[in-house]
Length: 214
Picture 1: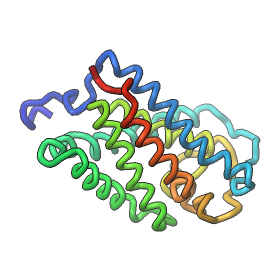
Picture 2 (picture 1 turned 180 degrees about the vertical axis):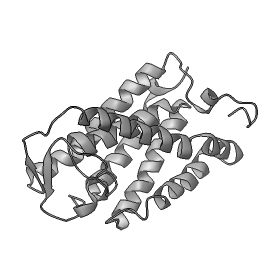
Picture 3 (picture 1 turned 30 degrees about the vertical axis):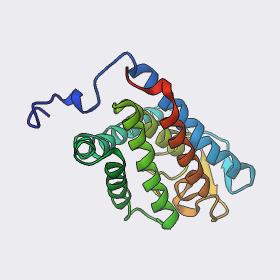
Picture 4 (picture 1 turned 135 degrees about the vertical axis):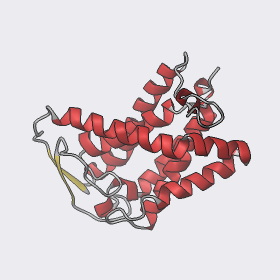
């Protein structure tokens, strides 16, 4: 990153500060709560049918953690890193968020079983993660949110992540009903419940005074 404005890699939002630990814990917990709010009603309604006979945990859980960490770091550095931050400086946080959230959605448009709600939700996820950076001026919160959402969705709850199954999940699950609540074959990210939790979480993050970097 020194090639750009003589900045170190940590200057794009990966610098360790006294607030970093709080941001990581906050992101991990909030990501889990959000996906749980989507999954539990679907399970209770019978839209997601679980076989509660867990597969072997090791080494699959380590593979899942590694994969979803790589995805979270790579996508956040790409979509909320240096170009996004320079766009904020050159335009405004709102304009930069709309532009990069649109690019984020377009980048997923070839995913299997994608539909209009899924595209909307991926756009809203871009707004959510961009808001996490704007609030903290750090990538640690968006990385933690992104990792937690994907890990609990794809491994623990064993559902497709953005329409794909990237790893061997913990449980066997079948999406029995393909509707606006379940998200159909694309999974929870095409659910209207996900739209609700993304909008609610974005507002919660932006209004949370504890997340500001001092």
